[in-house]
Amino acid sequence: MQTQRLSEDDLCRSFAEKVADSQDFKNWILSRTKFAGRRFSSRLLKQEQALARPRVLPDRWWQHWFWRITELGKEHETDILLWFADEEGRRFILHVELKLGGKLSAGQAASYAPRGRHVMNHERRLPHQDFATVFVAPTKTILASGKDAALFDAVISLEEIAVFIEDFARASMPVTPLVTGSANTVEST
Image (cartoon, rainbow, N blue to C red; front, side):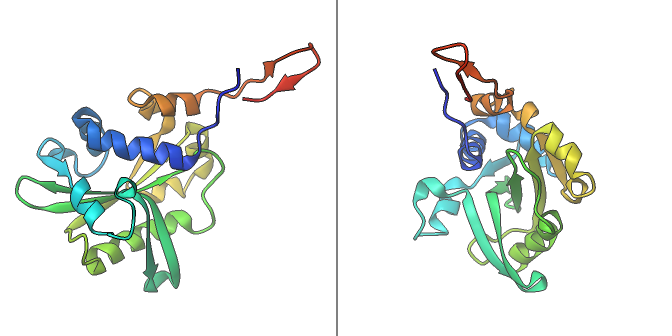
């Protein structure tokens, strides 16, 4: 039986929804960032974030936020955007780049900090006082990214997240060929 390959968007959705649905996962993700001390007192502003883009379907509250960044001279997109508030009313955002395979494109990692500053200073729909950038990828992609990975505030492997999210466990498994029919026929999963 063949299994369907997960796309980056599938994993982004699983990640965002798990942050929304699981306090344990939300706390663990925040513990990996500079917001670790606020992880227990923070809540995800999912409904408010969905309302901030009325033309986007509410179930895509997290997905593909685009901004034209003057400093960078072009439009940039964040795969997963997560907006939080702590019990004192301080708000912050995580800008998450998820790579399933492949590598970061030229300048992609370097664009995240300027993007975070731009959004914090100019985004009226999601007022906040701080941000962090997060890179999520398979360990081999993180290692291959070298200095680019170090440009993010936090780096988390797909394999670490697989403990919390089954889709990440499936995506972390090596693809092995399935033998079907005759011994000479091989199909990839």
